[in-house]
Length: 195
Image (cartoon, rainbow, N blue to C red):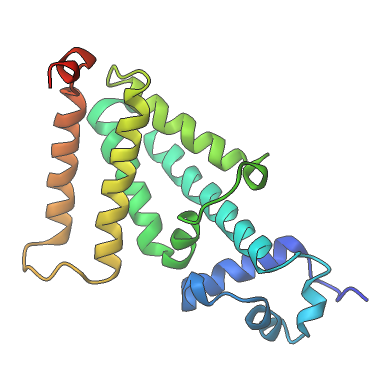
């Protein structure tokens, strides 16, 4: 018998809240069942297994983060767009550390199929980088650089890995200044071939 009020959507939202409270790695079917006061088996009517539940949380978080970024970058280009994009990305991660951790999990193309958030995230990133005059394969390379920089910074910040007294926000702002200069001066393919 399906427990009244339980649904895949409700379980996903509760798992996302749990991720922010205790960490994404601690989200389990058993822990979620306890939260609802039911047996584990009651949840399997709505989610296949822990992988399914975690993928659902990752897709939800990705959509939420993408929505924040889309609102932040609307009508902006160049450095303004880069800063708005980066700040919205970072703010989401700091506000929702467990959900943010979920966005870092590897998702198969089959699991991602139909995710509007993932598709929109790629469009926003490409649009911002195209405004810098970049085309493929440079858009992919620059997108990877931005993701690695944002994620590395946020990972260290969440883990309290910055011990120097310099203000973390000031360092973040200077990092974005440097990324802007780099994107404006992205090496041409011809420069690469002479190395």
